[in-house]
Length: 189
Image (cartoon, rainbow, N blue to C red; front, side, top):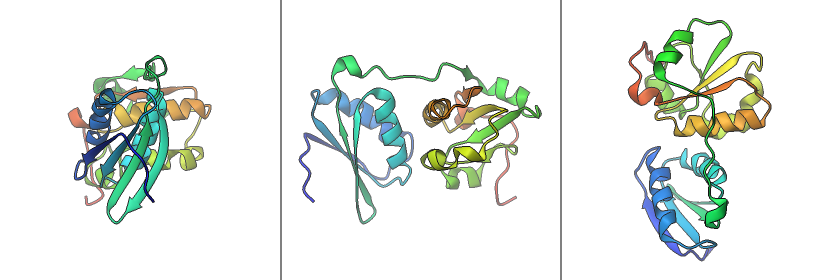
């Protein structure tokens, strides 16, 4: 399948959040209505780019898999439509540390399963961002949900998704695991 694009971005070999960071930067190099092709090898990039495009007002067109390479296609919206939304309830790592033992709190880790396996907060439930639409009903809606990822980007998108699905008490944890100094465990322990 030959898809016409206006710019191609090579993000192969990069892990989250770098494909999104580079995509966001490359969007400045194309005009409204043009299509950006993002070449990536990070399997989580499909859900990440789709969610980012939606929150930024761009149109995620889809992904074509060619071997290990994912070719993502994003159409740039007009400048008036690209106001990136951010989840308004944000807590820092220290605040998350203080609610870890709260029975009314649920910590949701939306990183990829491999990231979670090597290091996570002991009380955290793992549902990768790309699986959240299908698995959100596994979460207790009566609890306060604290969403964590590596930097706060995926967790922001996940928090927005949960609110769209009717969750009321959802908090994005920033900066997340990249600066977490509290207790962690791994699936190997």
